[in-house]
Length: 90
Image (tube, rainbow, N blue to C red; front, side):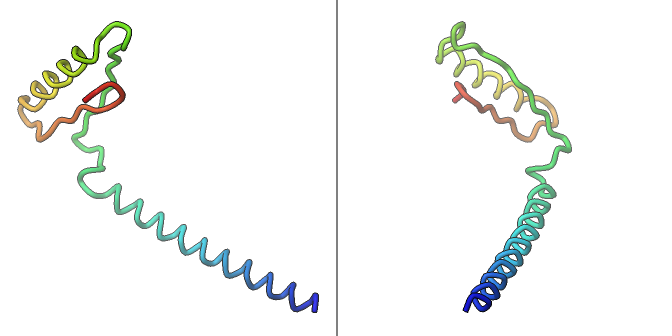
């Protein structure tokens, strides 16, 4: 009986390892697809970090700043879209 249980356990382990291997391959394939679509490429993309300290700037001031910055960025030649986001931003 013990030999049969050991063989069954080995089959289960091999089966689980195979499932994990297939899932890892699918995950990598999907990640590759995501990085090749336009929205997630880094070509023609600008990111920046601005610290509007909560001790110094009120939520209203931060919201107004974000709104004005977004409008100014979108008005620049060649800019297709601009997004402002993060903690404390609208």
